[in-house]
Image (tube, rainbow, N blue to C red; front, side, top):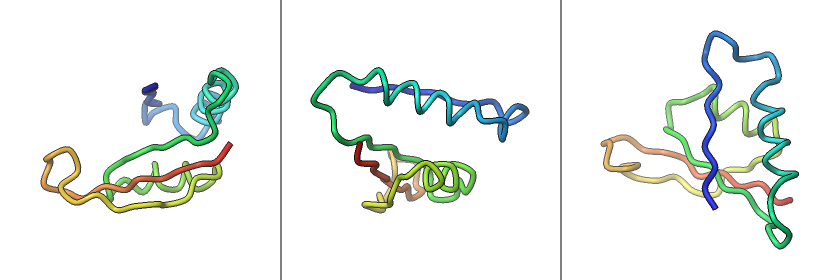
Length: 78
């Protein structure tokens, strides 16, 4: 199952992303026990957000989506 959400920069840091993430976690069907997210290596805002919400880095992705930049894969156990 893929779920995507983005919070516009002008309204970040108001708890909206955390509420969206919490909602998604609650609505996952039974049997899901991990959530994976990926983002560009230079995206410090995403990195801080996911760490704050209990995610841990599990991999670095070379040439993330063919964009000639590296990315990170983070995971959270539910």
